[in-house]
Image (cartoon, rainbow, N blue to C red):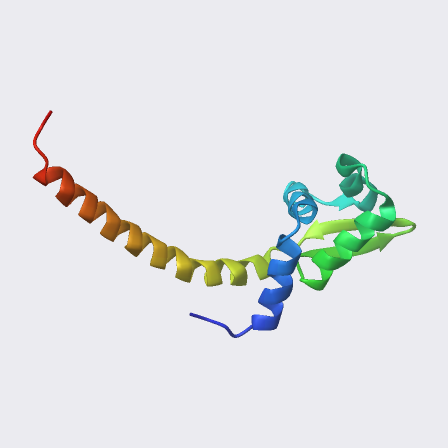
Length: 115
């Protein structure tokens, strides 16, 4: 298992730990959005949206560009790859455990008389 970027993983998982930020990331997967556009579905202030966006920026999950007075955000999926790599270890673990459970249940079913 790779733990080379543990501090970055911590910030990524912290950012992903909030439903509003996860929704913002999902919205950004369709293309760039302004801060106002990201805030609008949640009926939150621009200040509150900005705090969420700063958490996403700190994790490296989004990039913000200022065009005049407008702040444009876009998804940067790179840090998600490291998080996915970390999660893959546990996916393999659970898959192997589920395979054992499946085998045990099949063996039990074979030993039962048919109804």
